[in-house]
Image (tube, rainbow, N blue to C red; front, side, top):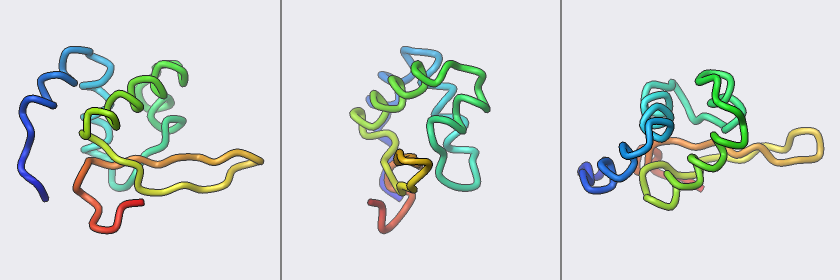
Length: 87
């Protein structure tokens, strides 16, 4: 696993929703989708999706899997660097 980038962590911690999402993703036994994160945190799906995007842009989490769901694609995220063959 790569070393912790404390600058990125500090930037993510500026918003409590991002910090909470990081905690949930880190504690999860596997990748999480925004739908799952919304259910776990009680945050609206739109808010979760926005903050997940920001965490991806910041390099703190990464897309690790996608699955087709009823004509759409569900995205699953994990901590950056935690999956050897992510994507």
